[in-house]
Image 1 (cartoon, rainbow, N blue to C red):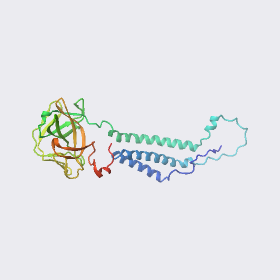
Image 2: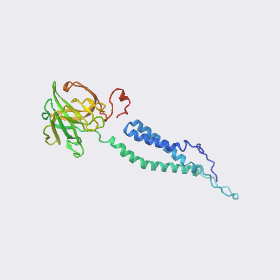
Image 3: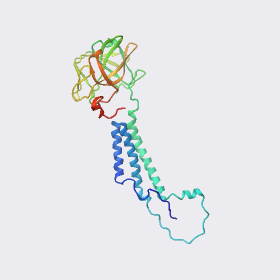
Image 4: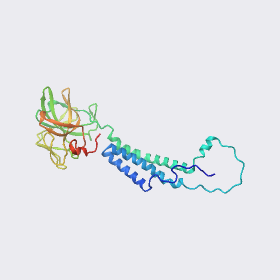
Length: 308
């Protein structure tokens, strides 16, 4: 029995067979670019890859779908069989080509998901899981003499103020006690991460003896910096964190802080474009935390990928 049911798209390709793989590859490239630049680019890449992949599979199965039915030799007429139930008539409307098309697309989707989902999960999930910064207790404010810089080395990931991963979680901040503004203490707390590519910035000046803060896995070292410099690519900053030379695009990031039971507690970082003035009189142009190499204001910022 021949099948007279015709698919509306039978006999024509949705997209040139040579273009579908290229579009699929372009979608994957956009996915990889979007992972490090912009979530919108990432979403567009996913959409292009899915659509192009579907069309690629559909076009690849075209020859199978359009294969002619085998010819059947003429047979003597037989008595008409009883009419088949409505459900059976409905089932006979689907040709072998249609079945193979559905099976091919379905199998391709399962294989694609099995390969793609784990890779995307490992690539994307770390950007969303446990990326916050814990509050870090650095000990009594008396450990920070007024008007002097202190190098603080500490573990930045903690649970209930207990060190979680001391071997890989050490961080450094440069802290200066600016005295009081009214009844409130003032501190300048600079991150040591260069805003060019993230290398560790070093203070240019003599240091004193290191001391540990009891029970907090914190080490404090007094220092008298004339400025701060990056040994990787020559970036330089003044004692307020402003860029003075080299490739950095803005001032050093800073830490927020709070005083809890007389102790200095770090409360996360923020980005700074520039600082006017010094110490407690400084006016800070602050922004949410941006990655190194990213402009935070001005015309250059308009050409920078979005940061969530």
